[in-house]
Length: 515
Image (cartoon, rainbow, N blue to C red; front, side, top):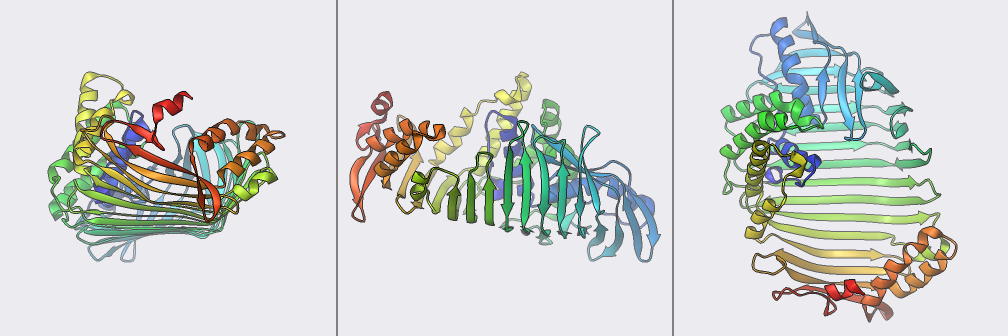
């Protein structure tokens, strides 16, 4: 299933992290280790919370989370009143990493079916920090977190996070951010035998202002954000495997979720876990299936130079399934509807597509073999002492070549009042082909010559447009003349032949690049 596929690989550590950490997290379908507690005494539960809850939440929420101070537990009723002081969640990127501090988080822990139920209330105020420095502040309206800890399988089987709204003001971050986000919710439900997991996420209206070092400001807003995904595994883990992997994942959650992946982390944390996962499965195991869907409604982007982009609906959907872990297939659909661009030269407005659609599929994907190659490459890199960022990506191509992995574009379409784009095609990796690929496709652009003329006219008074004229003019010249709906158009027939020729409209690509 999708959870076993390598999400990405390359020379940078971000690619390693995606291929390793994110794929493993998905592979375990949130098999977060809560560590079952068999006796409801304060010391046992305090140790369980401190040891297991940060890792379990990190893996389930998808962000690194830690407790700076030990939890406090006071016997009350049928359980304990819980206090979590100074809880930190890490957000951002490698270049700009920020911790969100919550102090205190309070709630109650009670025994429930097959584990314990933890109901928490988030504080009204939170702080943005970096290296101990306060960068900004924010407020939460009505924040709550409820989860169920499964004692039998040692993972979080249910989680519900609700925020009534968020206000943010971070003037010392780079970039600086200020604004509001409407109600936010996250729900996770996993089956008792880990055969399936479902997630839903949503956010209400948002309005953010982002300022760079140069003082230029970017405005970002939306009406709503909705996302959902579900996964199904045909061959579930045995209960003893669930517990073992859950404990390992919880123990390793902090370095796996961290943004820095050094050699010590890879050799002492990532590789043992990756190798364990490979031992528990084989490439011929049933793959299961997965589906995800994401939608942003009413997207608005205001650029620093007066450009304003509006998209009424931006959506993506994907399906992943296959007979085995080495024969996965993925179908992806992307769509942007109601697109408009303001602030650009008036001559170009008829050529801005109001709708864009891209449907494509990739298959077969040898996910298990790719994970094996990742293990081999990481072991070799650590043993050699060479920097991880210099890991050679070439060996990852071999499993794809042997599987003859291909991509098929079923639909490429863009529509504007004076411009139309349509295309389709396919290409397969092939070891016998001189360039390693065979396939072809057709791309047709209606109104391209007129668009070049409008761009040239706009370039007379706008330097930004002048930079685009040479490239667009060459593209138009290469296309052969045709018609679409009785209107002039340019057509491009692309082909990768068994004899090694790469051509556009029958002309060798190398010749075109020299012109």
